[in-house]
Image (tube, rainbow, N blue to C red; front, side, top):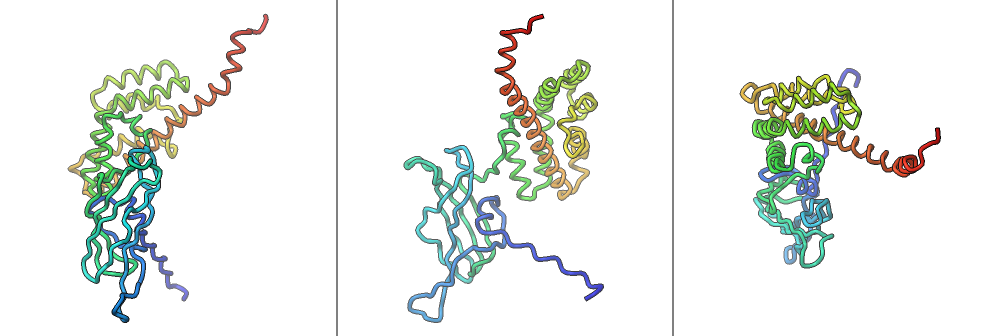
Length: 296
């Protein structure tokens, strides 16, 4: 009817497969395709049951060092009762060679029966670890690999203060490493000498915010994100203290810091890759030119 706003379509439930792949432990979610059925129960014509599904999963395999398809090694999924259910699912990488298969185990709690319903991930072994591009660790340094993953886990659990504290610590600890990566890009882009001197001066600063001020004018425009200097954005985000923000606000800041670090790492990698392609394409030509200089 005119004047009555239409209701927004209901957001689809995450699938059981998505839940297993992306949810950290201690998270409860109502999912779809949790179970199959109903199946008729033998001996009781009027009764039926649902059995827990065993979807194939796309997970990171530590043996193969990449995302691979995992299949469930259990012959049958557990039968769901109308109350509280506990079950374990054992997964193996389909790509690994026999005898050395990387394995995953999930410990789950489910409420009630039915295809869709509430699932809680009690635990996961090996421990849940969000997949993060190697390019990010090239930017922040491999020695902060575990700290970044701790921040990511805290973020996924909705622990805003913890996530923001981890990411802030990484940026402040690794400011020299980050500035050195940016300096390399500036050199590849033939930045003026006076800009390169600003990078050298920034590396001597003890605080990240002061270092950013040193190089704000020398930052390569090719690394801008959404037409903004990502270091300036990082500066603005990190200028807010933990004690000044609510947990929800810290969570928003943490997500923004992580997004900027990933985007910056991608831009640096893209510029390096493009330069390598140019050198490869021109390599043969430049080599011939050096051997046979044009006659005067």
